Amino acid sequence: ARRGPNMAERLESSDHSMENYKTSTSKRANKFRSKSFVERIRVSKSEADIRQTGLTLSKNQSAAYIKATKTKRTSKGDEDLDVILAQPINSLEWDPSCVIEELYADVESLRGVNEVERCRYRGFLDKLPIGQAKKTVMKGYKRRYFKIKEGSLFYYEMKQDVKPLGVLPLRAATISAENGTQVTIVDDKGRLLVLRVDQSEFLLWKRALTLESHHPTLLPGIVTPVDCHTVIIDIGACSVRAGYAIENSKPQLFFPSVFACDPESGEVMSVGSNAVIPENRVSLKLVYPWKHSNRMDKKVDRSSFLYYLVNYIFSELNADPALCSVIMTMEAAADEEKQMVGEVMFDQIGVRELHLQEQAVLSLYSYGASSGIVVDMGDRTTVVPIVSGFKVEGGVVKLPFGGNAVTESLTRMSSEKGIRYFSDTETYIMRYLKESIGYVSQDFQSDLESCSELTANFARAVDVDRFNLPDHKKVLALDSPLFRAAEGFFSPSLWGKDVPTLQDSVWVAIQACAIDERKQMASHIYLSGAATLLTGFQERLQKELEKLSPTGYPIHVRASESRSHSAFIGATVLASLKTFPDTCVSSEEWHSNGLQSFSKMTS
Image (tube, rainbow, N blue to C red; front, side, top):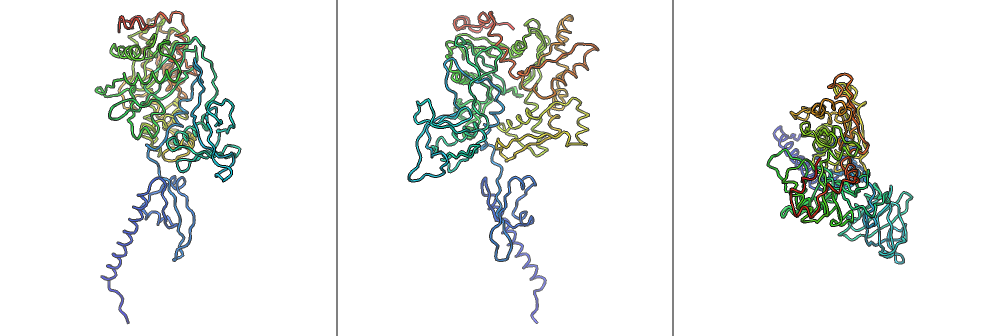
């Protein structure tokens, strides 16, 4: 009888087989990792074989990213599967335009002094007849002039034509792109339109069509008076608001205060939402010049940014700086900052008149009041007591936290739940999450205990499918982080800050006023800034202040529906006053007296 292999031979054979198996598995894993964006690999049907390829797939990934289809049987009779895995894209490739469009949608429609038709995008394209998917000998592409506006795609025979040849509604339309030159649109009635786009403009057209399908460019809702030559510019750490001074109106321009600069020369190339599109983020450096920094040595020269920003605003408003008075909001600034603003506005841009005013003072004007406690919350928080239009300097309290602290806290807490967006651009996702479903707890400890026992009662979700997020998530759901993130306002130690609470700061501002004015000030506390829009914020601050005040003290926290634009709206009120021209610094005064000319403006 033939003798079988001895133990040594069996072990050697086993080692050799295992080595071959590891090599094969390693090659399959490396082959998978080497591919980009959409991975197509052939693996066995069993979960064991999927793990052997080197993949680690969570339940969410399996449900969202894996599509398996049966293929032919192998010689051994085993079924193989084609697994298509759409990997999360790099954050640099993600376009945040849709998120930003929604975050910055609260504006007045714009019609300038010299009215210009507002289109999201326009230009010549080649089109096939409606309903035709491919060109034929008889019916091919035709050159037409297109405009994206009012939630639709209009096309004309010639650029100068007023009457369109046709209109295709974009609301709820399906927009797909192919080969970097072709865009296919199917409207809600199933009508098909195929467009051929020049490769250099392909991404611009695709983005404009996608945005218009979600956020239509509506017809102008207001008409700017012909004699309106006062422009308001409200610059914040996160956002810029600008527009004509039409009393009690919202800004006509509202966009992020972010700039795209050349990394070598430092030249400003773009501002606002256009600065953060993928094409710019890849080659340019993003700068947030008005964002506060905890580093004392980090000082940014803002003059070039201010020059670019103001020129951009005047261009968008179709206004002539030489004919306009400008109200510009700013924090209590040092003389050095005022000098820089004067040089840019008068010497470089050439405005007719300029008025500088603090945001907190203007916010009070938006409520139609001249006395009260203003809680102005932006990137940071400022509590300002104002009596008869004048600040009580001894009661001004500045806190090193605001809306961004909530966003950062929510970002950290959400990572525990598998929602991870950490880059500057991805911050807009977390901000949208905060503003959509975030809230302030009325009893933090009780809610925290209840949430640990019945998490489902505190869970909230928001649909984000239209944003095409980097990780392809369609719904974002959270529970306790939604109210834990904002608790730092009332317990700063939760944010790692050894500073007074918000309620203590407001109480200090009240006590800084004259004794006979304190009750009136306590009953006139005004909220300002987008961070105060969080659900439950007004009620919680009222509750905390009532705990601090004596029994029967008339605490009343007031909140306007438009408080995110309080400073801008207050500036429109200021511009309507008869005394406003007397408080402005003219070009002649600036060139004669320089910095001293700003002394005529008092808070």
